[in-house]
Length: 219
Image (cartoon, rainbow, N blue to C red; front, side, top):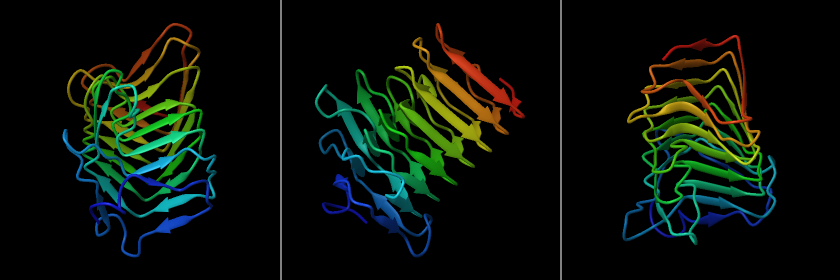
């Protein structure tokens, strides 16, 4: 799926279940973003809840340059919205400029939920190559693999990112697994694997906290 009508989609607060028939390997939304054609896949900014669901897609090729107008979040931007994603693959989405956070997803004052999702080879120039959370983002049984830049998962503004049964591995560049900003942000991980990231698994700012239980953590 490419072109207009398959990108820059707003759900306008509606309780919609968007589901593929054949799963993410066969159902691909290619945003076809570039430096001359800046696009993302979805924007949620109308108080959507977890009754708004996306299931079974690959979302790739988003490209944004943050000039203070476009915002952040390469493939998905949530602003005061909390949609749910199931069985999705976020791949090769990019955000450049400064600040440029959330290569695949940005969540501001939001509580999105991701289950059985994969985040692979996404890029953010200013951190959060996979996800930037300035709310409460939950990941369940997700894979965060091979993303690049300052951190793979980034929290800020007193937010929380919560992981259960997730694997965070094989970051590139000088990347932390999870970076938690200096403003009472928190990381909560249970039954997770943090392996083979270029830098340390965690980087905690002043007043940030991490609660890691029943997890396997290496450099």
